[in-house]
Image (cartoon, rainbow, N blue to C red):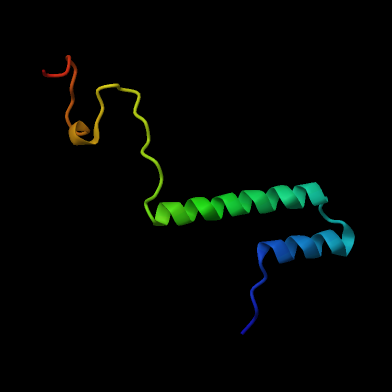
Length: 73
């Protein structure tokens, strides 16, 4: 079975082989990849903060209701 190459390993090999990419670009790609991985982990855990809705009267309880007037007292 073939061993998988990580993104970092691939980028380092490309940088060393023929200076195919600049170190700054490699670093940027690695940082973006780490951020994507962290987001994916948090999405998997459903740990992202709630998304703020534009409507000040919005709440998850009335999300399906179409409320046009003032909030009931």
